[in-house]
Image (cartoon, rainbow, N blue to C red; front, top):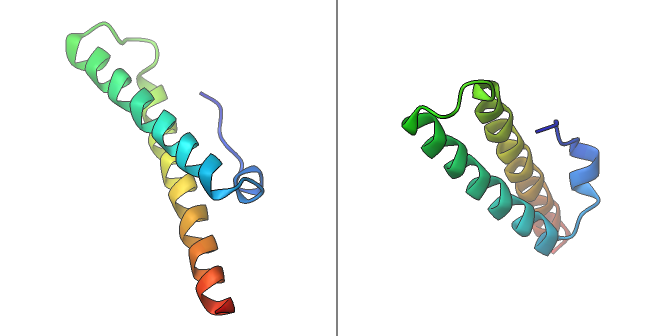
Length: 72
């Protein structure tokens, strides 16, 4: 999985961010189950990149929430 840029994420709507977050979490669970079975060998670094992408999405969501709260 490639790195998701924060700038790309900040341009997405809240619904799109939630959808992206759910997709990343399902992908992470698939990778973890494959690693537990022992079938995941080459993509061990893939888990790390997915976890970081999840963190990026959550960071952008929190930043937009704080901006919206300040406007009120």
